[in-house]
Length: 623
Image 1 (tube, rainbow, N blue to C red):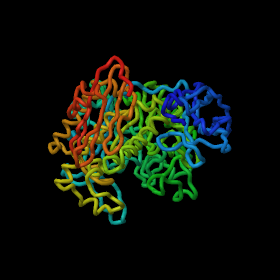
Image 2: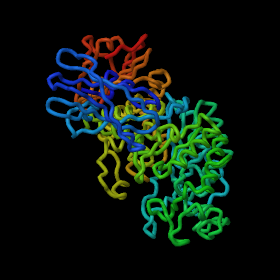
Image 3: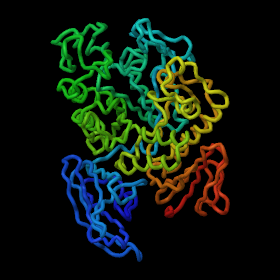
Image 4: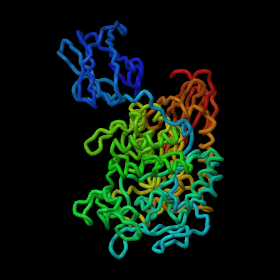
């Protein structure tokens, strides 16, 4: 009756710019004797619902008929829609069933239409590239001497030791152990990153802070002394730029550290922090219930006092002319990843984007959002991240869930549905630069997730003792090839979490934050990632190609296609050989990975294997 992903029924499909005329068409069985049809649209921003009559527009074969209408959304926002028809059985609704198809009855969901600002553009330089996430303390240590490093930091002497995980004598996890990775170390390894095809490095926080993760900012204006200096950062950006690599910084703007120049609860700084004086220039940044010991803090961690992001003084400090956002862009950064974007109010995000784009129109603003960012509700407010005034893109956790879920037992159709939902809801300029990761500093390492025992709430002691057995590791490495091929070929930009390409294992923090195993890498896997990086640079279809599902059962296959190229990717995550039937045109393809199908079009996939077939065409034919 209707399918929102098929242009026969909805044209154009997917998210649209404001003022776009959208054509809706439904087909009804003649034996229902339909006498009227309507499209009902709810404007999510205003709560206004409007009903548009549909017109009978002809027969669809002998047993069906067409009804159609147009709707033009005039303002950016979300619109939710469904249909109703008058039949000889009475008035019936058409709502959204599985695979976004229309079903008769009230039990289904409504469809979403995302409408974005017509002027919304995202930077082109990231599209088609490869990202690489680095936890700075754990990537590489240059060995160069540092000055001004606080004396209360404990430095590991063995690079390959496990990070500290036991609570201190007060029962607290302090994250006070360091390995000494630094900015100069990253600069020394730029050649290695270039060999992987990396075009953008995303750095976890580099600003002065008194924990190894540095999400408790002490001074936004300074590089942490253990990492180096601002001059080191500028040198890194310059050297990276010479290789075609951009640097993305991590901005933690919903809270600061209590041990900071702004709050100064621990008295480390000579400045007058909000904790010590109500006349402090930073006092208005925080919300005190009873000064100084009772205050709003992030998720009840007293070491992370929340800031009032819309406080004029704080907003000016971060987003003002030559403020933190603009200052670091001037020093060579190409954009910002925003920690816990859900915690940042709309006004602050609007101001941050304006500040960044004023200094550098090509700066990328990327947010940490774990769900579908197009319809996310946080603290009772529908967010507008992707409508054109805030984020350029987001961390794509839904794709991670789809990839890892499929490779650990979910049906391919479930995986494809999660992918298609995001592609339907996100503006295309967002989709092309989605940060597609399969692991981050906040998640179990992908290799461990794929082959290890499920975590299921087990404690840190248990996690610290776990290593994949030789058999588990072999299977995990096979599945990592499937996971990474999906990651590198789905719409968006793959982001490698440092060391995933080297075969690093680990459950949750801190075990997923070990040091890169220089000299102990899984070399075959590194070479596999290098090959994937070459694919990204060689095939334009991975930058701008449409995503077309081909097969989805136990095995899965999909196609990326544009007017001149087509790339088919197929996956078999099971421990048995499988075959899938392809169109005969793929028999004449180039086998980038795996082998070509037989003359009949039958593609054989060995256990836990994948294939990638490439066709150069004048115009990729329709399936």
